[in-house]
Image (cartoon, rainbow over all chains, first blue to last red; front, side, top):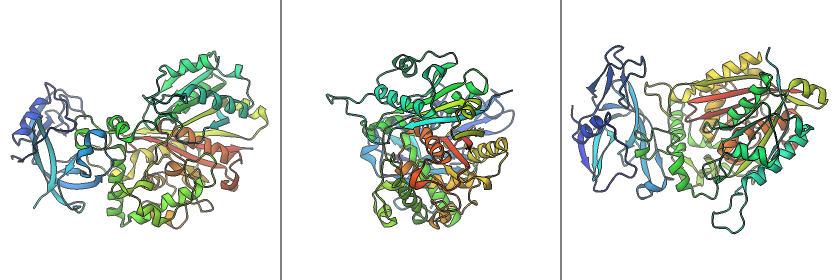
Length: 139
Length: 397
C-alpha cells in the first residue's frame, strides 16, 4: 500500500543520515513506499530496518511493506526545541503502534490534540532535500 | 567473600548557575570547585587523604574544556591510587554508575576508601544549543531526532498516556512540583526555595505539553563527592554511617521506545531493578521509610514511585496530591526538593540523591528530617527509564 505524499517547501531541519543499507527505506519513502525488514528465520519484523534480526541475530532478512496504519499511543507538543527546530515551534510529535506490532515515533500532523488510541495513518513528507515520514489521524 | 560498603562522608555544592559565559573575563573553573567539595567530603568522613585509593568520576559535560578530568584531578589533589581512577558516562545514570564503580572496588577488596565524585557545568550554554546535544542522547539520531524529540518530550508522552489510562490530570501530576518546592524550601543546597502554589505551577508557559516550566527540571550546575569505605572502617569510626544494603540494575534493551509495543509507563526497568535491590537487601517496598528518586519531570516521580512499589499502580499522582509522599506523609519522596526544585545537574544528579539520603539516614537533615529514618531507596535512570539502577540504603547509628 502506498502512503499519501505531502510536500514541504524547505529542507529538513535535522536530516537523517542514509547508508548503503537504509537508502532503500528513504528512497522508497520519497515515492510513498513504507517498508521495513523481516527475519526469514524467526519471522519477526523490526523498525528501523536493520541488516540483521535484532531478536535472533540472523542475517537472513527480507524487505517487506508496512500498511502504514496504526494507533496513537501517546503524543505531546514541543514548545522548547533545539536550535534547528526553532522555526517550527510549537510542533506535535507522538508514538504510533503500527498494525504489524511495531512501535515508532514521529511527527503528528493534527491541528488539535487527537485522542490517544485514535486510528492513524503514516504519510510521506517530501522536503526539498529528501523525505521524512509523519502520522495523521485517519479520517 | 565480598566486602560490605558504607558511606562515611559526603559534600555537595548548592545547585545554581555557577558557570560563566565563555567570554567572561573571570571564569569559575570545574577543578577549583570540585577540589573544595572533595576536601569537605573527606573531612566529613574523618579520613586521612592517604587512605583514598580509588576515584570514580562522573564524566563532565562536553562543555568542560579540561579533558581526562579524572586524571587531571588525581594530580590537582595529589591523590596516588592503587585501586582505580576512572571516568564514567551513562546519561542520567552517570553518577550512580560512578558510585557503583567505587563500591565495586571496595566489594572486591581493591580499595578500602573510594571516592565517587564529579561536577556538571552547563548552565552558560543556551538551552537551544544544549538540546542539540541532548536530543542525540535520548533517541535514534536518524529515526527520532529528525522529528524534533527532546529529552523531556518522552516524559511528556508518559504523562499523556498516564492521564489517559488512569483518568489522572495535569493538575494532579502538578502537585508533585508543589510538594517538591515545599521540600526544597527546607534544603539549603536547593536551587529554587520559594514556595509555589498549584495555580502558579499551572500558569507557567508550556514546555512539552501537558507539562509547563515548573513541571520540568531547571538547568543548573552542581558538584558532589561521596566517600565510600569498607564497612569495617565505618564501624571503627564510631560515627553514624550509611550501609549499602542492596542494589539492582536492569536495562530493558530498548532506547526511548520499545519497538515491540509494551506498557511504556510501567517503567519495567525500575520494577526489575527495584525487585533485585529489595531482594539483595532482604526488605520489602513497605519497609522503606523514604525515597530519593531520579525523576526529571513530575510524571516520572509518580511512575518511579509506582514501579518501586512505594505506592499502588495508577494512584501515585492522587496520593501525592493527598500528601502521602510529602514530608510527614507515609512515604516521603524527594525530601531534597527533587529535580524540579533541588535542581538537576544531570551527570551528578544521582550523587545529590545519595547526598540527601546520607543527610537523612545520619540524622542531619534539619527541618526536613524524616523521623526515625532507617531504610531508604534511591533510583537513577537513563532514556525514558529504559535502564534503572536502584540502591537500598540503611542507617547504622
